[in-house]
Length: 628
Image (cartoon, rainbow, N blue to C red; front, side, top):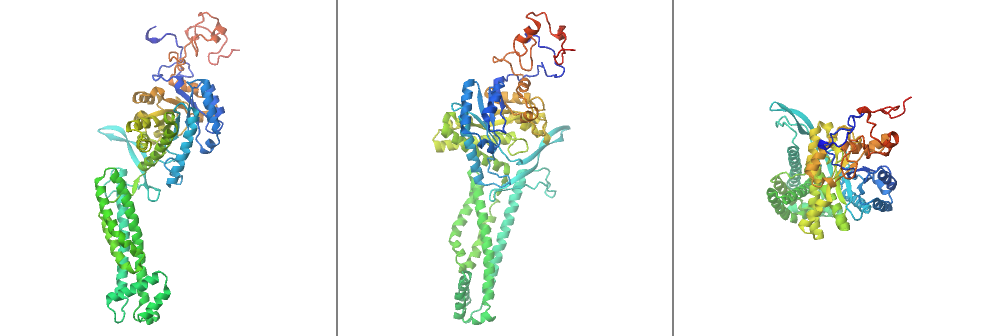
């Protein structure tokens, strides 16, 4: 027959219009490339993995989402699974979905701590070591979520606008978060547009620049006020409060400051002795010299100056750190500002002694005011940063370190670190963010491998690209539909991430909730997504696709393997020829001339299918059961 139609394929089944259809243009997905996940609610991975392998699946993902359950799995179970894998043959592949931990170090309270990031890194390294036991001679794909925090760095939605007489969808930012690295705190970026400044859209970077500038000058104003007030109070107290008999003004100041030194250190007895020594006995009884009033003024002014110094020191450190990082990224203006800060620091160092010598409090005021002038002369440093940039920076530290640890231990058999996009609405859930995280993790791995392990730059780059990539969850990204996206936007996300993908998770939904139903039962544009993967990723054929259908298991308690294979139009036989799971032939069914046909109808070909005029006497076409 022409066109490759070798057999009559049977009529559509009325209860299932997709049956027998030919729309699966992406049927180059053999069953061996599609796998199942295990139940993440149990630590008995030997049992659940065996059950999945018994369905005929040759790829099984050991899924462990909760650290507590993962910790309950005996280490020997991973080795036993490797033995089972070898018994079943080399075509069986096991992967690991590691527990979900937050790689940035951000806590659920929205506070960042460096030790939290280090702890997450240790947990991930432990997971990689166990993944290696699943196949010590291979590169076990080990999936980690890019984030465990259910909040986005910025909220983007799609709005329909009119452009040149036509309506089109555009993506706009509605809100974003900024991060203050000094305190480890997150804060929402004020989203209200300024009518006075004529703002037309929410520009994240412009808003952050304004926030940094306002914060910088308000803090400088506070420091300047403290320094100015402290200087005035001290100067006034020295000039107006004390007039020692038969002493010049300059000598009187020295005597009073010497008395203040003892007072500040709590040496009250010495204070009283000096009062008597200089003929100021009447001061205690309200005498004309007002020594106690002068001391109180000096104390008051000193407190102002110390508060101003504390603010100046913190602002200097913030500015220096921010400018230093900017200089490392090639910012020439930042380098010039750093030079001014270095010069001021050198000049200020000798005067820091004034903090320990209360008698020099009047000189310290001038140094503080000079410091304020220098800080005012530089541009506001980026104290507040886009949280997205911070999250990618800290997460890439973690993922690059985990990959480096794996390579140190296992060399060419190191597990692959595959970073998954969490459900839309979580941090780092979009394609551009995830791709940037993968690329930054690779870059840091490369630098560390060259520096710490002595690898050549080309070898380090090769290993980075081999060991770090992305797991793309088609169900998770489909949830951008609740923000106004449509099919085209979902497919665009797949196009962006495809070049760095090493693993795929399959689940369907309707774009609103994390339903995890079998493919074809929701509105995930699987065909278009896989087309992008095939076109953009040279190693597409080697990528395993794992059906993540926890919701289906929970409610229907059956394997979704057949539904998944049919949706993909996968070929039934290993040689990848007709028939396909979605196009069962009358003669073949799920096997050529099946035994059941001969048992029921004999070995001849006289009995035609019912839709071609044949009869199945006494049996219902709907159920196949005998008719009464």
